[in-house]
Length: 221
Image (cartoon, rainbow, N blue to C red; front, side):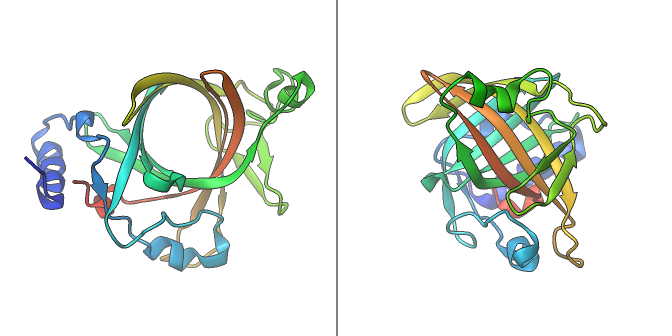
């Protein structure tokens, strides 16, 4: 039976109101979302995150990821076309209490130990450094465990499911944030997620820009 956007949204609301657990199994390959383009239009040039392809209409989820690490579990909904993903955290009641959209800002393929050390060296690797600077010179402070010295990034094991089945990959990441400077009701904060990804025999570094999203606006179905 196909679930309508209203029935799924109602299920989330009911779970929150009654204390029932919202099951992440509702996050599935092939489900549809309706991304709202409003925040991206309001943010304009103040944000680096780009809107999902097809925002304002129904789009399909091409892959679903579950990340565990650092004592937390995160869920990702990857959209068709590789335009980005929604990353959600579920609260104690099982309803989403945090949702962010991340689009690609940059991707790097280190070729030797020195290049990998630039990102992951335990002493001064960029992933885990107190600040991250994007190519336009803007500085983003560390959102996870702010501080003045480098810390180890968080290592997640991600179970990624798509039309081919499930596989596990490793994501070593740190989240950074900075004010956008845009007036309300535009997004007040923009995030930069920097991660080293190990997937099978391949490895790379990806830099993504993100903003907060109201999960209710997705019309999960």
